[in-house]
Length: 117
Image 1 (spheres, rainbow, N blue to C red):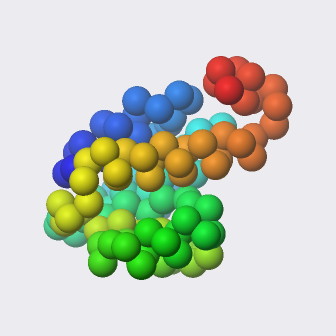
Image 2 (cartoon, rainbow, N blue to C red):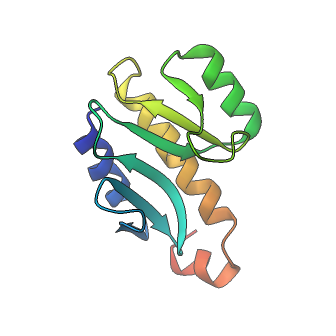
């Protein structure tokens, strides 16, 4: 997936909002006001930071050289994924959906219901 593909996919997820709280070089995607993805716009090919279950995060880092601890994030709960094309599109979409689902699960019940989950 390219950076544009990642951005488009993030926007397709329920309740997703694009924001730029850190300036024009970083697109932040939130659901219920909480971040689930951060996409670098300055570097090429770029990267995306995604929230992740700590055990799965370690597994993904061991399996993929393009996945590492979250850059400028809590290293236990966030991964940085280099968008170098080495991870299959379906797998990267699953990682984005996982991040979104973790954030939605932490939202208040009324907010989850509003999102349909």
